Image (cartoon, rainbow, N blue to C red; front, top):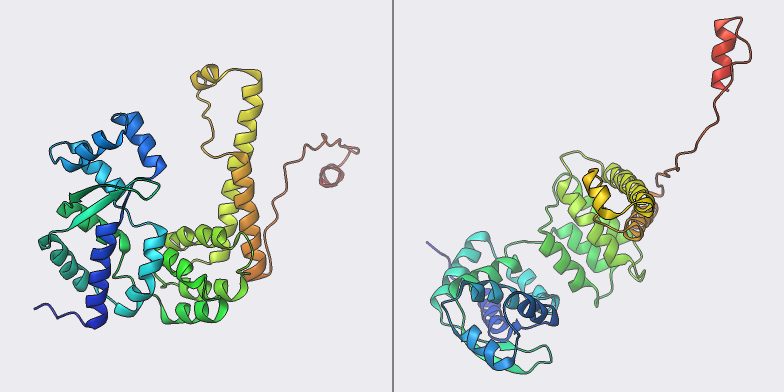
Length: 305
């Protein structure tokens, strides 16, 4: 039997409904997608399209439009943390949303209201799932955030943790506590460093040292960087079509982005562990000459110098 919601949970339910009713935003990127994939997004035509319910492309578009952005998540974070919804609560909340008729506004990028639509049930469910309301922060990590970060940045950090659904088992919680204690929150790269470590923590197996994960990630980036530079050299000698025929693939990430990623890893390692792993560029060595060929020992020593 489902347990009744407490006052905080009921307030959370009401705020989620309110966010849905006001959360349909057409960004410039979405308008560009409509223009490229569907039709020219004049307001009248777009309003008529969104009001219909027979085109499958409309469902995909609504899924893009009704996506809880960072501002909505930050606004809800303190309430979700206090409500401590369980997975059963989330299922109950989803059932409540599906049986409740919700009419939501879709707004233009400048805030003008375009059209009000009846929200499909699957959009309500997707919206709720993306809020990840059943995730609960580890008390030790929460204490480290409260102690180590100013009030203005705390909800931003907690939203990132909630979106990652980070589990604090296998030593991850301890690493996060050190992260929030030792990283400088005023550093412009602070959030970028957090965004870097969260997926790495999720991939960590039991007993895996986070430092080793970071170092291995840096080595992988270095290998990719070398391949990207080799590709640039080859591209200077040949055209893309020829390289593709030869099986040479273009890098998916720019060398500058990989260099920045490696720099962030160094920053994290130095601040948290006090050490980092340098990676030296390969150096062409001259061919060593064997100066004394009379004995095996002399030949080996000559090669070792």
